[in-house]
Image 1 (tube, rainbow, N blue to C red):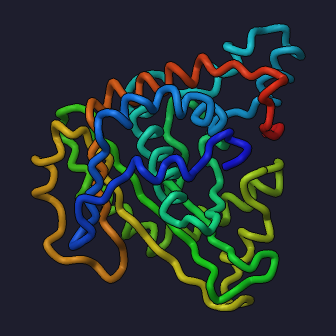
Image 2: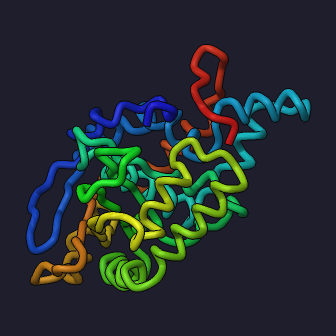
Length: 274
């Protein structure tokens, strides 16, 4: 998280659990949500493109830093909404692991098309307390995220559960292989090839725990109607999480507006070249 310029401990208070069973319900308050544009603008931009790359390409091409940033971030609409939900869960999932560090690839830097979601499993973290030595305490965290900011026909809880099951059966394995291929071709500051190998080549290492979450990020005005799809009993295979956020559409648009305006300077350049 350090290269994002974001203190993950500050996120602990953002996600109070209103309940933990049979599903987790998180109700973000309006005060925290309204502060996210200031708190997350730089970090969200760095989830897509580092300071160093923005500066280097702007100089090389003779264009503005803002133009480089604009080539990485999504436009307003469903992809921006979905990306915001994923990035928020990226912070939520990492905060839950404190004081242990959760290492997570920023898949948004690996997009081939900024107008579309990143491929494969949504949010992946590795918890490796004894690294570089593999340990029986190693854990892999995988969250499938669905976001509902407006009153459309989507059913984010049901859809997140359906796709979470896909992660468990096959998609996570494909995601790890894809991430390894990308890491072979370019530097990925947030994850090492050896860390990916630890979970890809599972038979070569001590068993590790895998924890799956199906996460619905929902506007607070809509959440009560969506909770009818929440499970009556907890699953042994995955955890269902519902995160309620006030004025979700306004919130994520303001965060991305701040991200577009987060022009790097030499004084706060901490990113890698990817």
